[in-house]
Amino acid sequence: MRLLPGLMAALLISTTAHAHSVRQGALEIIHPHIPVPSASAKTAAGYMGISNDGPEADRLIAIETPIAKSAKLHGTETGDDGIARMTALEGVEVPAGDTIVLEPGEMHIMLMGLTATLHEGDMIPATLVFEKAGRVPFEFMVDPADGMDHSTMHHGHMAPAN
Image (cartoon, rainbow, N blue to C red; front, side, top):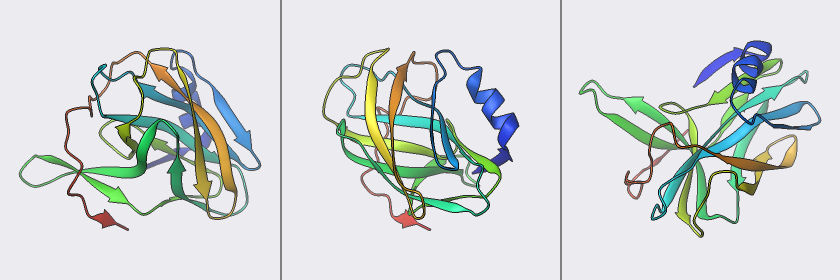
């Protein structure tokens, strides 16, 4: 997980083509997007920035979307052997006055068991659930495929981490 000053992260993310955001209370969800997976993909990854302008930290504890049978927060760690492994996360802290970034090769949202084919330009409804802010509805934008392809990775034997 990388924490960046809110303004810097917002500027970096907002330069992405078709950037969009949603604000609810102190939280801003910045350019939530899914790189378009192959037509036969059963999984996809979601990325975004989450900015917290409030006076206290909050914690992202769940992700919901009708486009997948399961949506979970994952972290990526590279072992001493040089192999990257994903680990399911129970949640992630969003510090007060800061921004967290979910990005390829780092922390991200895994959408497993896709229920439909995703196409570039689609807007996919979803909801982030926070301990304090509650439910924050937003839409993932399906962007051109230019990042890590999660469609061929196996996620069936991952143990949750804290």
